[in-house]
Image (cartoon, rainbow, N blue to C red; front, side, top):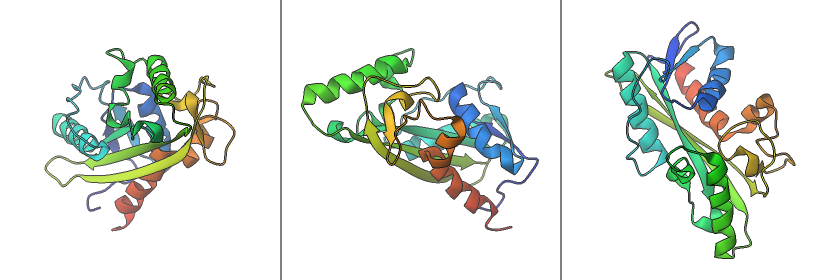
Length: 203
């Protein structure tokens, strides 16, 4: 990825979700890359009109890069539930209503699973990370983690749907795991690893 990242760089995280910004900042910290949130810069949130995670991540990263004149990284991610045909998907935050209340969103997911009568509780998180620079080509990297949904929610760590998602091979939900454990295996980490390989492969 020509013109990638190097130690000492600053990058805009194109999100107003402080939990997401914090998690991405922790991923970048070992590489000496400082992160600043779009919210702290007063950047507007563009309307997410894409039909896929990749499309939404790309439009958010490009908007932040253009407005800030800095490199920008945008994440678009969400929960895909097998029994719901992949929903809520790109509408994961919207299922929480205008206030993006994930307590309400988790209740809706479980209510719709039970209403459908499906026995499967399989689900996955998908993350698309888009890296953009002003007037340069945007690159998008994706990652997934698979697991099972549980009810009631467990744990107050993480954010979003973390308290109802148990990743394969583990007994704890993402909401119960310490941040370091979650970061090692999350969908965001898997996308991030691909991004960093691309960022340094040309050096």
